[in-house]
Amino acid sequence: MRILIAEDERVTRRSLQRQLGGWGHDVVAVEDGAEAWEQFQRQQFDIVVTDWDMPELDGPELTKRIRALRQTRYVYLIILTGRSEKADLVAGMESGADDFLAKPFDRDELRVRLNAGERIIRLEHTLVDLNRDLEAKVAERSAELVRSRDAVIFGLAKLAESRDHDTGQHLERICAFAGILARELIKHEPDLDEHWGRTLSTTAALHDIGKVGTPDAVLLKPGPLTEQERRIMQKHPCIGGDALLAIKERWGETPFLTTAAEITLCHHEKWDGSGYPYGLSKEQIPLAARIVALADVYDALTSKRVYKPAMPHADAVNIIEQATGSHFDPNVVAAFLAVESEFLAVARKLR
Amino acid sequence: MSDAFDEDALVDRVDGDLEFLQETNAMLDEDSPALLEEIHAAIRSRDAAALVKPAHALKGMLANFCAEPAEAAARELEIMGREERLAKVAAAADRVQRETEQLRAALHQFLKAKTE
Image (cartoon, rainbow over all chains, first blue to last red):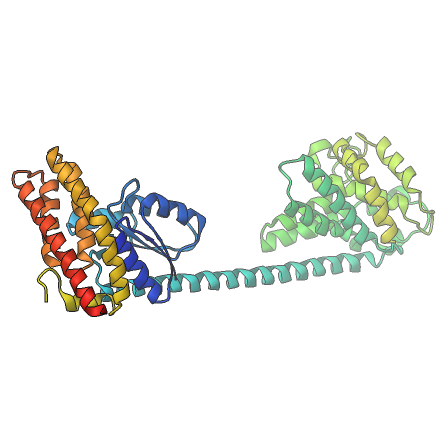
């Protein structure tokens, strides 16, 4: 154990130091409470043995200060005193001491009282270690669960998308674009944090999951859609959103499901209110959906389809910039313009 | 055998480590005269509060040597100070002085005999 001794009388201090050192403890001995307080703030001690009456800072005051630090590791405090009045004992214990030892200290009494302290300190250390192990295990399990959840979500989204035209790594790109925009927006918005950004980036994969309910004849039609076909196509946000809301109702609300539902339901809404399914405008549209809307359009423009070639990055940036305030949230466009080179890098990497 | 301290108890207290006893004995030689001087000064100025501190410190120091007579004298002096009973304080201080000096002499004699 690391033990700090505070005792102003030299012979007692030296005797304690010799005795405790002889029992194999690592001992620091100082001659008053103020110095003890200094040492205590500088080093870690398991046990403090302090005299009561000392100049400047006495034992009970030193004890109070140590307890006020509220260290995570417990410190066992023994007050050494020639006082034997009940009132003194009460005052000493109330200051936060664990035990009393009468002066002149008796060697055997010192040993057993110290043993009691050691037992508590060791128990406490064991608890701290157990807690740490437990926390590590919980973190590991949580990470595993999150990985499994993300894998299932991405797998489902991928499965739903498999009916669509060959879009390459469209979902991977959308997730990456949403993540990039989230990171940029977090810098300027104190209400947003990394956790929100990660949730957004993961759930962005679900944006088109409602297309599982779109008939092949409409979904896979190579030419332009008729008015009726467009109406059928435009149902996909509600199909996906309803599915997610039903899950939410069954399993309870989580930020994850809420964000997923917002994105799925509202990623075709436009800033000026001309989008679908509800014609929401501006802040009525959830931020997550405003972000995915831009990511989705950028990806559609810069990807090759059976019916159109890929548009160069610069042209896509231009189109998006021109749609500021009409199709897109000006803040999201500003974030996009700050990180557009990262979009290009992702588009090149995830074809 | 001296009446100033309990030889067996003292040897046991330091686990027979006479070298350590010499070290603490030297501390007693060095520190006790100053404490006694503080005690006398407090009494001269009739300052009970100023008497308590050196009497308390000396009592604590003496207690390490299993020196019951000297320790008891210092304790009595400390109590007189705490209770502000200064009527017989000069005689009590003289007793502390005498007992402390006797203890020091007895310790020296004891250590000399043991280490020769």
